[in-house]
Amino acid sequence: MNMAKKNKFTIYLTGIASNLKESADYFSDYKVKSEKDLAIFSNKMKEYEHKGDEIIHEMIKDLNSTFITPIEREDILHLANSMDDVLDGLEECAALFEMYNITDINQYMLNFVNEIKLCTYEISDSVELLTTKKFKNIREKVIKINGIESKCDVIERESIKNLFITEKDPIRIIQYKEIYESFEEVADACEMVANTLETIIMKNA
Image (cartoon, rainbow, N blue to C red):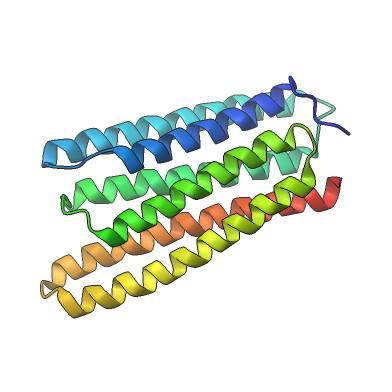
């Protein structure tokens, strides 16, 4: 069954994807210079996370009261939840920066954020393509997301290796390692979105 452009579930999914992309833009563009900046940063990411939760809550209510959906209802829910996992991960990263008072943003962190931001753009584009059943184009996006996740694997290994070589403070090692691993978990969540999209393609192409 074709996904109508004005279908309410299409609107929900594009809203979740748009909120995710906007949150990644904010995460990438925000400049941290002080502890006060960290609090503002963390609170704003929490707002994005709440907005995403609200959209999913409304979508689930409609799913429970709708007999016919444009694609299988479990696929709609899985796609929404997998995108929400990415946003939850970004919000958790922001919280870690504030909790550990990390104002020294290094190149590894910037590299993680840039790659994750690219993933959210590919995810947003994929959801838009889903509305017109351009499954071949979605598969191209899926491949790109998987490639980006692989890059994040490399960044994680390099960042942790460098951390143990250069950092002498054991507490700082624990904190930075947790942040690096948290970023990698976000990248893994992006890959799960790609896997969900691949499943939808297989069922509907």
